[in-house]
Image (cartoon, rainbow, N blue to C red; front, side, top):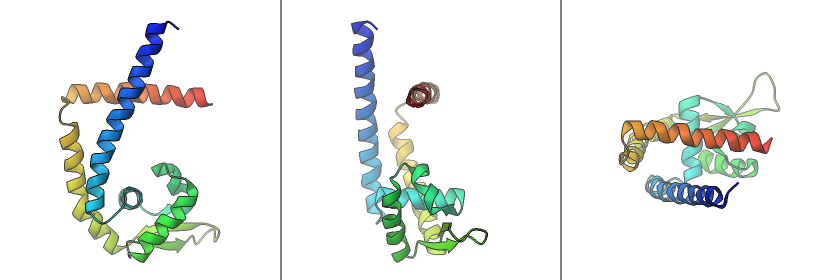
Length: 148
């Protein structure tokens, strides 16, 4: 690999990382105004859109270490936003279930969250968004292949 290719790859990585951090910081700041931390929001949003989830699988779906899930689920349970539900077929499996309070909260705050993300990304045209999605996915899939 030439030095120029290497420099471009490093520049891409830095630009992508900084852009992600800037976007994430703005979105997380807004999530805090809802009385939730980003992980709590991610768990509620997952349960709202995908239904009950085994506790053991939530971490992988929202990119969180499994040890932290118990803590987050405990906090959401204390706020009456989710409940643990035993699996009827396998007692070793426990599901997280969004409560009516949790559904009401997500239905109230998700549109504002969605608008904020759209506001941030609206600097790009629809074609630019599609190109960015395809290019970033391509890099992500390649990174996953290299990890195997």
